[in-house]
Length: 278
Image 1 (tube, rainbow, N blue to C red):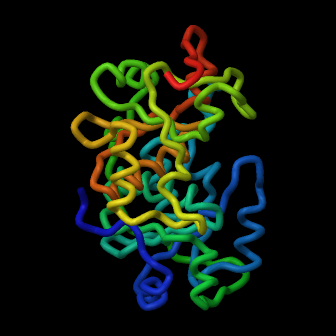
Image 2: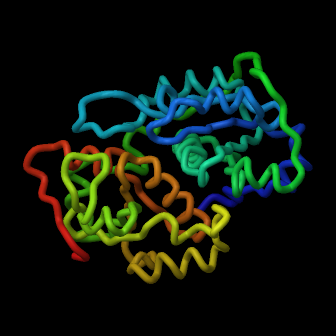
């Protein structure tokens, strides 16, 4: 586990704002107003990043809704954001730290060690009395060089299918989606056979901050992800699974991610869907 704390509080960010490279990752599924909201008010100096275009690739339905961008595309995006080699990075959003967690995970995989998520996001910043700025922020192109992690820290659809035979596969979606009682987005309801349900809300507080590390560890333990076997995670399209990987980092549990997640699984002919609790 990396020694760098993956979270930063609004208070600490205020104290260190001048030294931090701040990224605004506001995004919600089915909405396209992230940049508009950013222009109306953001943490001073923050650069907007586009989750759909810069933190996700685009392919066939069987690739999932948010496959990873290729390594070169992510590296080019990071330089557009002005990221500098060795300088600390903090990412935030305004919706339960979902998109910020995806950015954190993508950058960590690509070798950026000193990257953090603002715990509680923009609401926490505002609650702490943080000021906002309007309009766009233009920065010179950065000099950061990202690594090319390839398949490091991720599994494909076959890996996800096989994972429960030797590890713990966690489904981060809401319980009713996991059980197959409802499916509002994807073509088939249910879950990957052998997966265990750990809804992402269980690792967050009521005001959308992360629980303390010991409490997150207890939540993982309760579903059998105690670290004695390898852990992997998926969700609907790979965004929430990255947040579960961040929760695992906080609790000292390494979590591999299936980026295609249920959106890829349910769009691939011949893949079975389990229903109920098993």
